[in-house]
Length: 335
Ligand code: KG4
Image 1 (cartoon, helix red, strand yellow):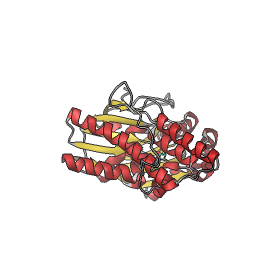
Image 2 (image 1 turned 90 degrees about the vertical axis):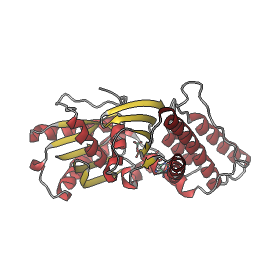
Image 3 (image 1 turned 180 degrees about the horizontal axis):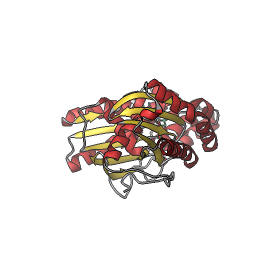
Image 4 (image 1 turned 30 degrees about the vertical axis):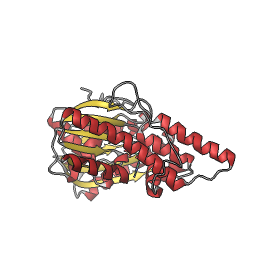
């Protein structure tokens, strides 16, 4: 089934042609360089750039796949959650395209597609499994009981892990996207030097909180600057990274034990983090359970993962009509 998938939920305009789990083309036009000047994504600019890029990106995806628009069986699109102006560009483009070609339109939830990125190179991965999805806007532990059946069991009560990385990196003077830069320069954590808090929540034992850590780091940097004390950036970066990974690993493996999972997956932009991957490798080996994570190029936003999830959404009967609207927020287990 040939699907043209479209993704525009944040700052990447992406299109891909997929056939089941197989990727025929994968085009990503990133806006990172433009948003870098502002230290983060500016929603208004993101929407305008999507509008300019979207038809060219789709044409390139179709061309690189070696097909014509008329060969397509369906159009899929990320319709929620994300930046509303950005989502509207992709959603309306996809609606018009599907309508003009007379083929089905498949709505795809952004976090479901991040999870589906794991299916691309991992033929052996099938539900059920437990997935930790960590990105710039989300940190969520989900039971994946089937390709379109999800149950969130832990989530952040405030900031996402990626937000914590991005804002602390910005305070350290690192360019956007901070999570990636912070991961690159981190050396080893020295807890004597920078004793950062380990926030605990009184609610669910599987929920996260990253805002306390973010504020503690920003305050530490401001105080040091005011006193003229130089920050050891690689050591502080490593300390932040370790704290975030500790929290993510603690809750995920608590859930693994509580529900007896034998397979774990990582997803989202932060799943590219080198320490997170090695920590999960270690923890899974210890427990003799299988671990999957997407190839680096499928960790951040892309349309290949949208096409793969769309295939399963279509099989389960999830098809939209031209009344489809974009939504800034939507739980992963929506029906
Ligand atoms: O999934 P994604 O591309 O977009 C969202 O849907 O949010 O994730 C972007 C996030 C940013 O916060 C970025 O700093 C983070 O992923 N990120 C990383 C790494 N690479 C990207 N965070 C930690 N370590 C990395 N290597």
